[in-house]
Amino acid sequence: MIPRQLRSDEDMAPILALLRVAFAGMEGRIDPPSSLHQLTEDEIAEQARIGEVWVIGEQACVFLTPRPEADPPELYLGKLAVHPGAQRQGLARSLIHLAEQRARALGLSVLRLKTRVELVENHRTFERLGFTKTAAHSHPGFDRPTSFEFSKVIVPAPGI
Image (cartoon, rainbow, N blue to C red):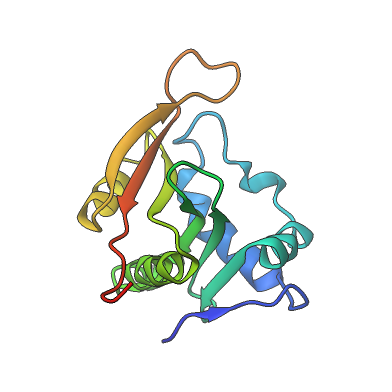
């Protein structure tokens, strides 16, 4: 399947449902709980308006937020999710590849994302996809790291 960019006026209920199913395995594993519990369809539509929301059917999605003001300029990947029944089929890899293409098209040199400390399987996946752990962050009120930041340098396309 080919990734498709959502428009802000589309029905976001299937994406919110996908996110809830895909992130359900984090329940009881991460502390603090995921911000997904507060996410609304309107907020997904806003993400599609000010950034980008890409989907592969109703099986996978990623939110992309260009940050040209960052040093170096980056594309932030948020809410990368694959339905549990569609995992291990290369959908996350396809969305990461898409993010690389979008970063190049936007003149951004880094992909950046965060994942929770407890989700070690995600760390391994991102490392296999060429990301490097670059920072640790703590949510407010925590005196220990609660998430890791991963980054991947984007090589410009030939001729750029």
